[in-house]
Length: 295
Image (cartoon, rainbow, N blue to C red; front, side):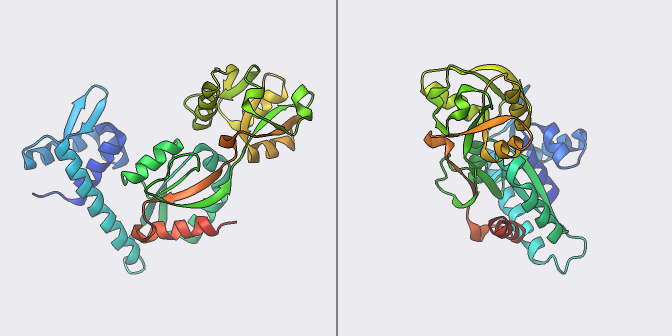
């Protein structure tokens, strides 16, 4: 069996991407070269590693076994690079960081930029995902560090408080609700809402809890950014639910009022989580320490 590190990294990337094309792009390889390597691995083993269909690829049982060992080998190599980094000129470690929308847009930039400035030889693969997807990725060893809402199940992971991330209702300053300091989702389910486009994790959270009340929220418009939600609210298009930090920042320049949500799911923390702190590669341990110490 003659697999090299490029083979293992390619196979891991193919499984993560769900397509050979996506895996080739992540490995900085042409599609033809990636396909040839995967076929060569299957020929070497005498067994199919991937189930292929028009929608993409899935690992076979043999593929999952190979993926498990590939992750272990690549993780060990990453640890070696990190520990020998001072001696190996040109070696560059990286950290796989997964975070939810709120962490990415409101809380991560300063901590991440200062980390990269302090460690110029470390690169970061940053990916935005829903909190529940992040914890599953960490359990499957598809990431080093995750930043998620504490509303998700963190069983099997080590977690640490990163930031407060409470959600608030935003309304125009002249709205009847603007005089209230606190409210619950049930108080506004009949109102028209401004929401986010696509499969936003925040939007899914709000919609989920509306359904638990037996209601479906009516959206007049969906926009791409949280600031745009506040801007639409300012214009009287509807009401919105956004992180407290976003509302506070936008309220300095927009005519909106912030109302605390009393629902348990709206009072939340962002958590930094890992599989096991002591098992992290050295580069990821540096980032974890930095995130937890950053103001």
